[in-house]
Length: 164
Image (cartoon, rainbow, N blue to C red; front, side, top):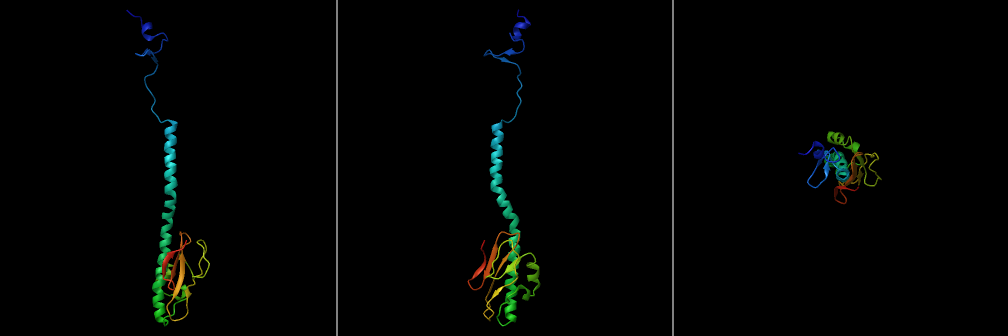
């Protein structure tokens, strides 16, 4: 008969396996390796680099739509104004007295075609007009929080083309 000390092995603390190794603890702690964690962090970083610029653009898109709605209101008001003034287009937003223009253009900036504009500069509310009864006019419209400036030009036929 074997003694208990022989079953424990020479080290006195573990069991012998078939290969002759001593196993002190059969339970293993589950977890992720450092390499796995770094790989997951790299994937998250790549996804963030792709998605964050898109999300910023999505947040600015409603402001661009406000500017376009202002431009549409100006075009509609110009039709009325020209019909009341023998075909001469208005050269200022203030001359367009429709409620639509004042409501739609509250948070939009407007400037004439030949005026220098920048995305972060307030507009002058001027419109470019020929001053003769041909109904031709043009303007730039943008939002300070938006992504671009839109041009409406009856001379060249541009209809709210984004210029930046």
